[in-house]
Structures are given as structure tokens and as C-alpha cells.
Amino acid sequence: MACGKCLGFHGPMSNYTSLALSIPRQAELFSCRNCGQLLEIGALARFPIFLTPEQARDNFPDGGWTADDPSADG
Image (cartoon, rainbow, N blue to C red):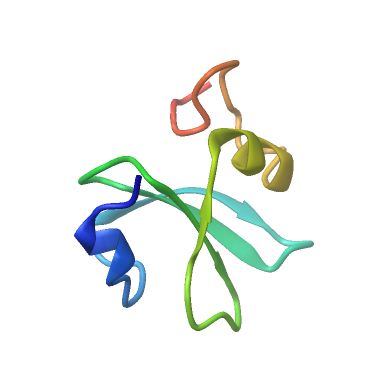
């Protein structure tokens, strides 16, 4: 569940960790440092897309995910 910081997202600032980049999707995957929510930000997007771990693995296949946690280093 997204926290208040995620719901009020105004851009990738110090509250978010960049996890992966997808050139074909023109998007970057971030993780909230406060709650761990995964967010996808498109190049021209105004708002983030909140992702499940499964969606993050599908959308960012080169992220080096472990079996259970897309935010963990693999």
C-alpha cells in the first residue's frame, strides 16, 4: 500500500531509490524508501504508476530481480 509520500509524488527526489530503467518503455522504476512501494515513471508521464512486484519484473526484465522481491539486488 502506498504511503502519503507516494500518493503525493512530485518527481524522483531523495525519498525514492532508482531500481531499473527500460528504454523500450521509456520509463524508470523507483522504490519508495518510506514504504517500499514500486513506482513506474514514464518519460512524459505526469503521475506515477503503482506496480506490484510481478508487474515490475514483467515491465523491467533486466532489473536483476530475485525470485520474490523486485526491489532486492540480484
